[in-house]
Image (cartoon, rainbow, N blue to C red; front, side):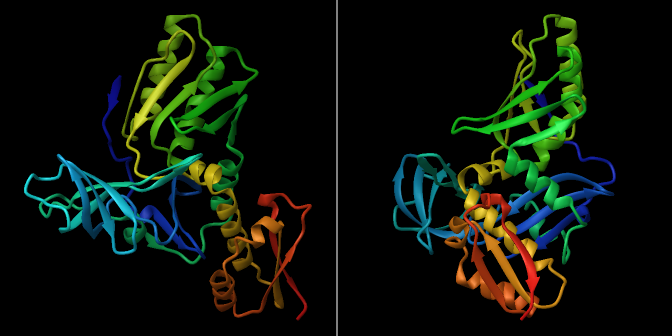
Length: 328
């Protein structure tokens, strides 16, 4: 596997991360002018990679163990010293957030916090807090993640989340070499915009010529130069395997496993943007209404200073919920 070292893109600083505190979620966009370079999403109450918290060691076997946080969440630990015993309260650092998958739940992972280790700034604390992202930016990222598809001139990328990996299918009408080369820039953008990590398989069209496959490998080398990862060269069937650090659920994972939760939060965001006077009416699929927490509706009313009503429409798609102003 080829290894790509992380190198910061020229001109980017933490200030380029824009942070929007929504109802039920916090959002982050890395913005360069009118372009979104990367996106992140965090739901309150989740343990996120990098955070340091106290937890009690409830089981231990060799250098591994399980700790329980104050709210009852369990964290799998590695690199435990021999002299640490069960029942001890430890300061632990989360290395990977918990991830829900179809049929199973992967607990968060962590290790003992090291006082001497360099602290990586938390984007959600260090970024620039904004009332609202520039128009359309979050919507574009959310819509692409929701559909699992992003287009480019001549084709599209289709994303599928599985328990083992994320699979990307390159589809289009161009000749194989041209299609693969045209897909590379779109793929590089999508990997960061969807906050993808872990094992990623890209199914390019089959390219017979070794020289042409090498061209695609070189294009990937250039496009992914600022993104930490390891990858294989393209094989004779057009397959490229990428491995990168997995720190938590990607936007694609959110959509695949918590589609209702993601959709209801998006409806609340749309409601916050209603400017016309009057009562805010949320019209949603019945399944979404069941996910609307009373405290979220109260928070929407507080933020907007208006009464909020909710109505159901079974004909709406899950992602089709909308907000509008109606007379008092």
